[in-house]
Length: 470
Image (cartoon, rainbow, N blue to C red; front, side, top):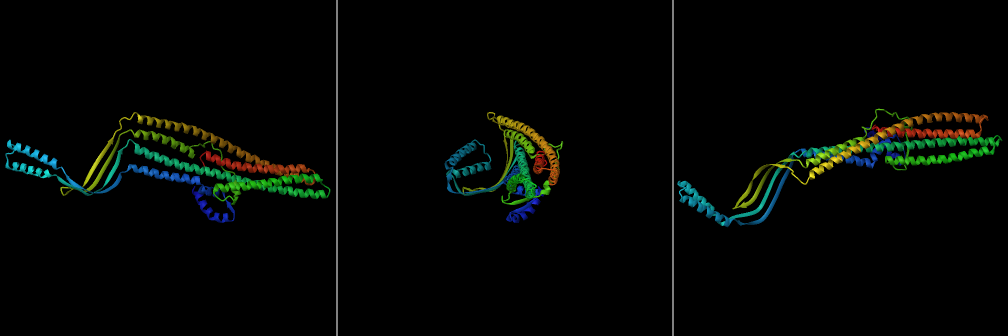
């Protein structure tokens, strides 16, 4: 990816000018870099991975204390008097009780008796009630909350967020590999279309030259009119093939432009030298699917399902939370004095133990376990499919190498046959029909080689993806 980033920075400096001229010469790496930059689905997957990274950080915060700053202010014009009758009755009752004790001789000391009399007078002072006034009441402070044990809920939730982030990252990697495969396939189609156009032009040139020779020979009486017509028919077919090659070339170029995010009218000239070199990828007996992002996603999904079982179980285990607060309250006048006017501190330990809720917790845990088993079965099935895909890709790659080798031999033989036929025709030992057939065989061999090379390039790409090497 670092290589593609550097490539795209260089290419972006050239693209505006190239697009303005509707022509751009791009290598395969440049096309891949542009596709990775411009693909909207890939950008969405990368944003999703970034989002899950922040989600993981947010769940990790649950391990640390939660501090909150609190402040509130209330003003009310409510005021009045309360407790007159209550305090009056209470004072009379207490006074009678103390007087009885004194009469029984319980207070022999003069000081004790004076104290009792003073208390009685104090109680009597409230017989008319106590004035109160709300006025302005405000409080402010800081609170702390620290989970000590939540049945494993905090740890499990964090682990699930971490797995979610890893799945999103693997999804982005999978998206990148799929984009690369599509671009390489589109690039191979452009190269093949260019090769088809090249052979069509050369075939048309051969037939044009041959038609000139046959027409000259006809004027000299050495060839019949029928020979001229034979060549003209072949030349008409060649012109149609050349038009078809041009159309195919244009459509393949538009398809590549679509995949790399350039205007469809941009004329691209692929780097033929990079494509002509056969891929160095070979079938390896040690290749497996464990390096594929799809495999990693399945592993993470199974682990995520297992963590879900723990999360459901944690809802029905004891929970212990430590709380603390430091507050300052001010306000509420009682008997012309503020009732609250000092800071206070408090510590709280909250223990919650779920007991019974009609087996709700047991059933939810069983449901989560079944989902975990299902995820494991799905993983096993998809891993088998990936292994089959790898085996098929290996077979296709092996066959593609053989096909290129045979096509190269066939082209060499057809070229030698064409030279021999042309020489024999010039010497009069080879018929015109044989020469035309030799030219057709050469054209077909050249086209087969172009197709075989493109197929090899795509097969190598798909094998690397199936083996997790892309």
